[in-house]
Image (cartoon, rainbow, N blue to C red; front, side):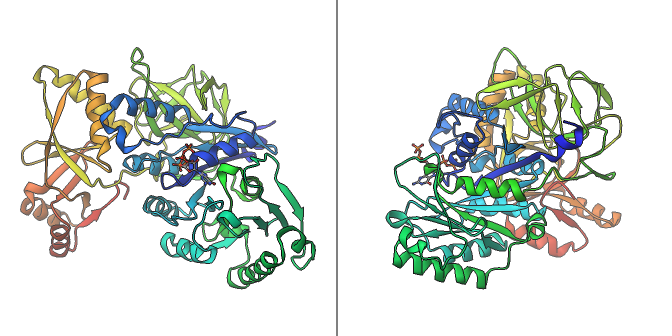
Length: 526
Ligand code: G4P
């Protein structure tokens, strides 16, 4: 197969959901279809439950699992499908945001009973910012839940996306009989508890066909006809173009745990999902079919083995062919590096890869050279865009608890910040260090890892802060005045960028009003 054929057959996507909606279960069923795993239960959930916060080994173990399941690849109908895993725990939402920079499309899983939940809203917002194509899978139809039309309204309102059902449920809970696939014009019948591998499907090209009554009974047949009629009337026609532009999301219904409706979802995905897309850099647009290799690091993970301090940097290939043992330019460090053991991770296996193509994700062993967003190329200086840090919402002073280990602490903080565990700010007025995170659990992870991987210990101290936002100003004089007047609230991030530390929403608002020329940014990318 030549380069272009390899490229054309890649589909790289992520599954996002609120914890417990069924992401792990759906991933597993997709892998079963692809033959990548043979038995159910092989994919471990990377959920980090709240109760695990006191048990740091448990956190580490679960982080380990999430390394193994970071990228799951399988072949299906001639395509190579890469699923990029996203942490379910909301305290690691930032990891998920960054992973979303490395996918070309997403599947959003929604629990039919719970509807759209907060985590899903936030993640979809990130997708919307980039016009990432979205398919919606409404899960757990074997349980009682919300009415389909109500749920679709909720999805449109809360997620701010336009939808188009491509399958329609027949009843739900105890009365769940299956789905009618408008995409393939067939009836797929649900047999509860059968754990069927192959679904019972009936070709029905015309819903007025009397065969419908035979299969689902007169009442459900009438209801289905009426509802599908309404769907056709209310929702726009499905157009792939609109989906690819992020303007229209097809919706499927099913029950992942029963492996029901999953094949319809996957078959549609293979027909409509985008091939590897071009990526923006500060310099230019990088097209996947360019012959020269380029890629960027979107996630860094510490090695689980305490005897090996090295880390794994996950790199998405954006263009050209990545080859083992070939020297590539590490753009930020301006030096060549080659990789003797680039790795692909799959469930509990890892294998060394000799080459990788656009859309693929490769794990690179790293002893501290990489940070998130770093580019590798064949020589060109490229800086990939769209890998933001988000303005953190929880803050603590971090103090060195062991003066003999200050070097270790500095190194540990530096490296863990590169990994994106948290963000570090240094206040200009007094030089105090403040750690900012998106979720509280990250403080525990940081302290634990500093201790276990670097031998440094820290203690935290409460600090009353509401938000840290990056500041810029086109007028130098205004910036100067701002820096003088708000001296006590100014800090620098690790890259030396200026940050304003707001104590409250009210204070932030007042400051914004008083300094209309100042620009406040809530992601580090501006
Ligand atoms: P997540 O990764 O999105 O957090 O969710 P996960 O797949 O772990 O699923 C959360 C729970 O929902 C699991 O139950 C799972 O079995 C169940 N589930 C998934 N799909 C369906 C479905 O279609 N119908 C029903 N009724 N349940 C579903 P659990 O009790 O937390 O775990 P387990 O002991 O069953 O593994």
